[in-house]
Amino acid sequence: MTRLHEATIAAIATPPGLGGIGIIRISGPQALTILKQIFVPKNQQASFISHRLYYGWIKKSAADQLVDEVLAVYMRAPYTYTREDVVEIHAHGSFAALRQILDLVQNAGARLAEPGEFTKTAFLNGRLDLTQAEAVIELLQAKTSEGLQTAVNQLQGGLHHQVQKLCDALLEIKALVEVAIDFPDEEFEVLQPEVLRDKMGRVINVLENLISAADHGKIFKEGLSAVIIGRPNVGKSSLLNALLKEDRAIVTPIPGTTRDTIEEYLDIKGMPVRIIDTAGIRDAKGEEVEEIGIMRSKTKLHEADLVILLLDSSMPLQEEDAQLFCAAHEKALLLVANKTDIRRQDFMAECRQAFPGAEITAVSAINGSGIDRLEDAIFTKVTGRNTTWDPGYATIPNIRHRAALVKAVEAGRSFTGGLTTDLSPDLLAIDLQTALDYLGDIVGYTTNDDVLDKIFGEFCLGK
Image (cartoon, rainbow, N blue to C red; front, side):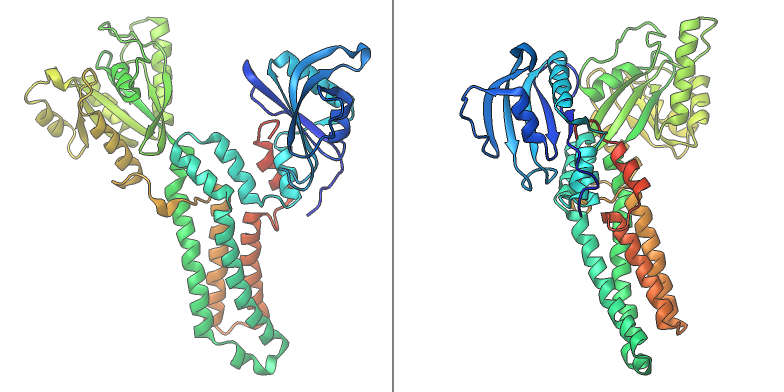
């Protein structure tokens, strides 16, 4: 594939804020020319050999005013990320300096890159297929080591290779069908329904395994939200701190200390969990700030994927506990009996009687006992599995991929049904081409521009 334009693009490729290093990236046919206009190498005889760093200064052309001390590298096409000439200027991580350098680059002939345009250029130039391009953003957004590994596997072409094998198998079937179309007198000899049905069955089986991987692995890529609810002073903030293994939330014996929701990310067996500590839900009796916190707690309860209802095992169950259970019972729900270090002897029996069939995990947020069991319970409740990371799901299709895989399965089954009803070869070929088109959409062979714009529009500037 070739680029649709010959523009030279540029952007700041590092996050905003203070840092030791900030990088300006330039890609396109004028990249080296622009570098030579604004960069003064210490070695005046520098010949800008590809993939070699050069030390020097960025200057403004007027009055040779120096902007920053930098390292610059020129990378000649096609051995670059975009398969175009690429320049990177490694400056100090001052936004003011980076902004000035970027302005100089633009004044010298580059235009500001759109979000994701470097990666889109790499895709259009055949450097990456669409699954690999999507893996770049998944790698940037990974919250756990397992999520990172799936992104790396996809960046290496894991999903692409599987899709290509499926396409090859479908093309083999299609070739037989097209022979039957071209030589209708030999149709019955060429089209052997049992053989073709078996070949398509193997393709459908692989497709369904990929769909299963998407369903199972979605949570490892995107994570879930878990909200801790309970009466005031049952230990919600202490539980958050125990799960985080740090003092994130303020803990006091005074009910109502937490006035707003507090959110942090946990890594539970490779599963990213956004854990939310809420204000204690009760009648605030006209206390306006606490009332606002309680309303936000109820909103988080409604939005959560998993609800952890925390109970105080040092005292009898209260009517408010039952009310919270009723409010959350339609959600994935875990009951957690806190303060086991001072637990009443008959508390667990009381819970089982009050909440029959509910899962109850006993913990002490103060001394940390039972926290590992709670993490196991969260993982099992959400995934339905007792293991941690399943290597069989190392390549996980995303939502877009899954939709295309489902459509490909439907086309494959339609083909199989057509064999049973002696459908004509030209109609069978349509089903096969439909399945191929959906698989091509996954890797970018047949993806329309609107879909491409949406995918790359999710990237940050500079990537």
